[in-house]
Image (cartoon, rainbow, N blue to C red):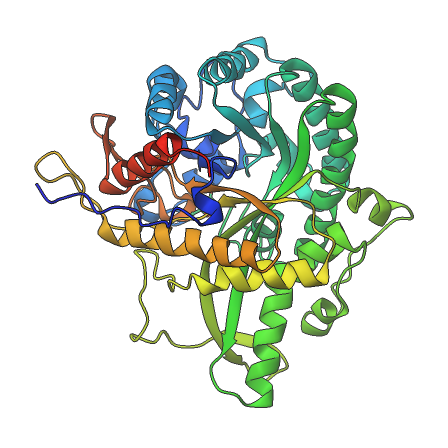
Length: 455
Ligand code: FCB
């Protein structure tokens, strides 16, 4: 068996201090399975997976990691890692029926799960919406319909009343950019719509739902923190021509400021409508105040850098991939400095609440050999990104924690089960979980961190 590489994090870095929160993350549809059990309704991802050609190899979330039945052992797996926190999401279609009434069986699943995590001293970071919208709401237009924002607030109200006291931090939405842009503009995610105008409207309603939900969370569970989780990315111009530089700027605005500006400044960036003329959403009086409600924390997901060039029509397009950079199984460019860059940029542009890196990680084509999984690229990836966070902290950015995506291999949306993001390997035929070297390296790092005497 190959030796397990160590996660080299200097003892004097912010990351090595015990108060820096370390966690692992998952999401309901990606791990739970049990799609038809205990009164769970159909979600937009069930529908999308059933449409031929949408998901690689025709994979679905019907069984996934069977976490719905294996949650006790999975919590033990998390506890065994020695992490401080676990980020999970609640499946809306599992806990609320079509009339808005609670589904006790679905709620019991999450109560038991949270109780076990609490009993083991693991902090719980709970996302209300990680993309599994009930299909009956999609049938009425989904996020393109303003009513969905109010339905989301009702759902947040119900869940936070039921689970109050068990949650450390609530995040309303996971990556509203993906829900709006991949779901309504590119159609690469459920519900598979390709209409930019609907995408900007969907984002507006997602953000409105977020703001309305914050008020419910505050009323029902005042002791918990409240925030949101957004994806981010960096973009570099292919050449230093003015057109390519503007292309990179527009791509950056589209990826980051389109979502961050309304949340933190209370307005949409003008450049988004320079990029997409005529797609201004309908905004009603008072919406932007609701959307920019102050939060206790901001969750940031970061994965990769992209190189873009001008498309010759005032926009941008992805440049052909260079083979000179390191890439992951997703084809994503490994660029740890990007994490420092966005953190420093947001720190300068906004008054950010405390930040948690709520997702970071990479996919590789891992397999079990002689009982082990040698994922050395992931160990280096995690180490370099953790150190990029350390650099940002040294530059004055208030980053309080970091969650690895993901606890285990799972259903990677349109890429199905082929892309493996876990620090734990999952054999989907047997549901056997095998710690990869990255998981052993994280465990060893956390153990050392606990044992080191405080300075
Ligand atoms: C993010 C998603 C998460 C996972 C990672 C790889 O966009 O939030 O569910 O799929 O990408």
